[in-house]
Amino acid sequence: MIRIILVAVFVVSFLVLSIPLLIAEWIIGKYNMDLKNKSSLAIVNWAFRVCLFLSGATIIVRGEENVPKDVPVLYIGNHRSYFDILITYVRVPRPTGYIAKREMLKWPLLVNWMRNLHCLFLDRNDVKQGFKIILSAIDKVKSGISICIFPEGTRNKVNHTFMEFHEGSFKIAAKTGCPIIPMTIYNSADIFEDHLPKIKKTRVILEYGKPVYMKELSREDQRKIGAYTQKIIEETYFRIKEEAGF
Image (tube, rainbow, N blue to C red; front, top):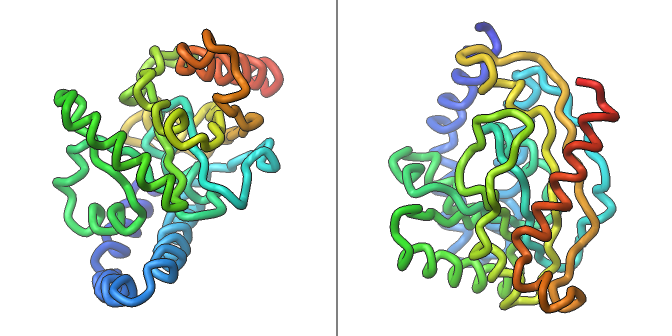
């Protein structure tokens, strides 16, 4: 139980003690948004790294050379753990917003940092609002901000399975031409979700696939880009499972 206590204490302490930083970031954003983007990225990156350190998780990263550094991208990944956000965010080379569930708006201070990081909040029961979020994400990418989506729509609670990837998420790449980066996350639920309420020291593998450019795909693959990307991630996942042996 000691790990979850350490993580919880750190998160609460960070959120409370970072109030002056939030004020400073708000002021910086009034005059230099690019500087605010970089400073918010650095601050949250540090906080997430501390959380991962306290959790005892060892993150093995593969294929990072596949992530373009000079253009915004659309990250697409499977989703089994709350730690997926931490694991992937500490690797991003440029400002990146995540599409999160609307319920996150209830968390004060945390939501302020999420907004600083260009996160968007999706109501999964409101199709019209979902369409507006996709349009906002398209604008983010056009302005140079990468976007990360877990297109299963929610955390998958069943080990070694995949839920259908929602096709709507991929309109971001279709409308902007940005590369899609498949992210395969293996064993992240073993940190926390598989044995609540304990946080367990474990190994997690994060593998980035080669960029997918929709304009280079056949018309049929473009039409079913969700299934196309899901197949890449599934194949990578089960290859990792066989190679890793855990």
